[in-house]
Length: 171
Image (cartoon, rainbow, N blue to C red):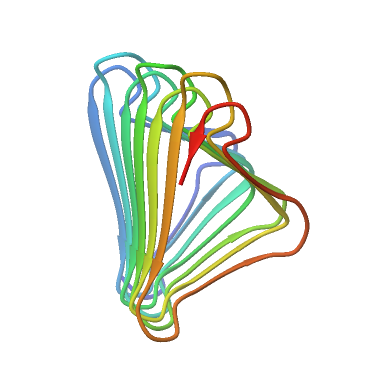
């Protein structure tokens, strides 16, 4: 809730070898140097940032679905920030990111890799905003990355390079 704050300091794992859920809502704040969800095969990591004033930050990397399954949901005015993000890294990995609702934001100040080796879906809906410095969709051979920007006021602003179907399949 509002005024609640957790600074993990180093690495924060959500669903490293099992099932893990992290929820930041009603004005809470969570930050760590690096955040990883769905690290190992068979693991499931779910991160939700919901509500105006709710904030989530990875000072360095945000990794969603290294070998496992990861879901990352930003809704109802929540805000997430990271220096770089990699989604669905290995071939068995799956990642789903949804940024939904006016005021909801996902800001990656560096590179955003969508579908590095596995399958990933990014959806920006209903007035939400995603920003990145550079983005690659369908990064490696055999990968599948998909991005949808849908709804009045929804935006994805990439300030530099954008590659769709880098070596894999990109939509």
